[in-house]
Length: 203
Image 1 (cartoon, rainbow, N blue to C red):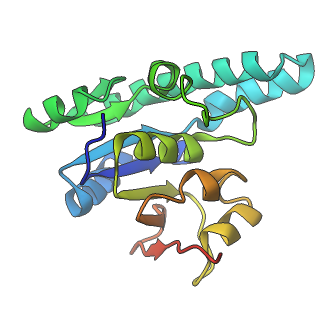
Image 2 (cartoon, helix red, strand yellow):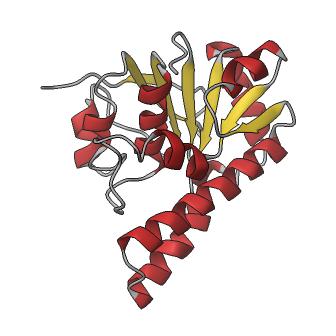
């Protein structure tokens, strides 16, 4: 199932209001591609689910499922921003799209249902898990050797992956979920010029 030697690029949902988002993303893809898998964050779409869960106590599993559908929606938005992208939900679609010159974008709901939930260590249905951990989990399952988080805020220089979780820049589960990925990097895509911060474990 694994496809070693590629990069997962997680695009924070907070970046979707950038007028030149496609230009900035293409620059990142040119630097780290062409073998990349894009994962879209939830942004305001998933925030709606979070607010409704607080108001109506939807329950962990229902809120989780609705949030995943929200991530499928933002994945579709990402393909609208980048016409060279193609939606995927199965591992075998990676190589097919790369061979055809397309950039795969993950639809996480069906992917996680088929390739994560059957595992004993599957991601829990919890707000402690965000699209950061989902991107990392996809990278682990598929055999990525690099994960790049594109964000709207800057981390302090020298911050570790655990610092990022403690400060709330990534979710609390992210360090453990991403621990087997060889290279994890963090970029504030709103910065110009942008800096690549390598997150190394402090444990």
